[in-house]
Length: 111
Image (cartoon, helix red, strand yellow):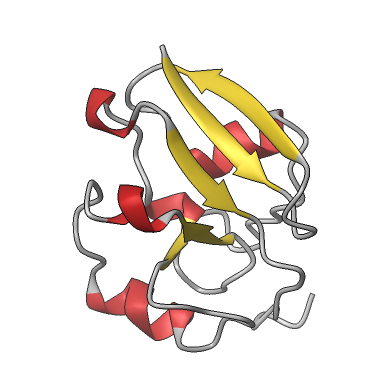
């Protein structure tokens, strides 16, 4: 099992979840009660699953594709460590991954 730590927008509250390798971070977050909508259901048509990956974990991820970068350009509070949770597939190399949930999001589908 892979352990993931979710840091709330307040920066204080931390919740841990476990998932099997191959799980998408968005589904793990939603199952753990995290406030990530994933409005487009992983189609990279919104940024409602935007997370900020801890700096020391960011290099463990494969680089984002151009479509993900385009959506991150529209995400509220995006940083150089921002990613879309729907595009992060958990692997053993990501055990202990820490992500922060931003304080808000912009739904580009108008829902």
